[in-house]
Length: 341
Image (tube, rainbow, N blue to C red; front, side):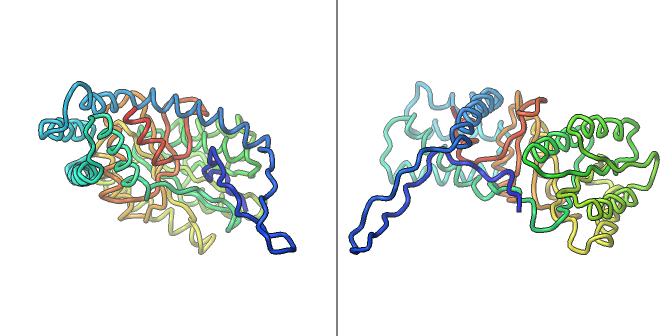
């Protein structure tokens, strides 16, 4: 079973003491870090630096509340305004402020920067239900249906996921089920060529038929993953959502257990509209995960807190740019620290 995207920790917990034949506890053998352990640390640090830079527009307004002030009602009022401006949403903002007030009282914090640290912890706790790894392998092929509105970065995200999967040793088959947009097949074909993976497509064909053929082909060829691209659509357009439901039903005819993952790609710049998209697509399809793109340069990065409060669907990946390395796994603590750095 492949588990490509499980989070790698920077420090491993020490193993429990072992007992020798005499029953006396002895210290375990200390093993040197593996090459993989050593390699991942600078890669992850590089990602964190890019994440901080990408979230700077959102975070600077919130972090600025704690500069040159004191802990009073004015601070909480300013913080409330900053969180709302970051599209955290009223319910999540109220929840965060209540938790923050309680923790300030419990810890008897007296410095604004200490309060900022408590806010990082409170935000991390709120976001932690969204932190989950995408696991590939229990079913072969693992069928991933990818949906989203026009312009969210859906096809590009599929290309980046393909690169990650292929680099990790998985065999990937792409399904170009976006048969409405003229350049969709060509764009996905470029990613297929770049990653040396196969693609199933039909010029002007029925999207559900393309998905059906891809699942059958993936099983016959022994692929680990079938990634199904779909046409962008608004959750408020019933006839388009019905088309997505049809694709899902037809996939289930090819494999009763599929799709194993239904991922929604959302644009981080859309703020509270992203929450509405999550609700609409989840109600229609039953989402299993999210990919949040374009967080770099946005002032609305607080929307993840709103999603965590309103509809806590796992965020498998977040993106802060167009490069392959700009899509990474989501970590609640990392995100909170980067946002409020």
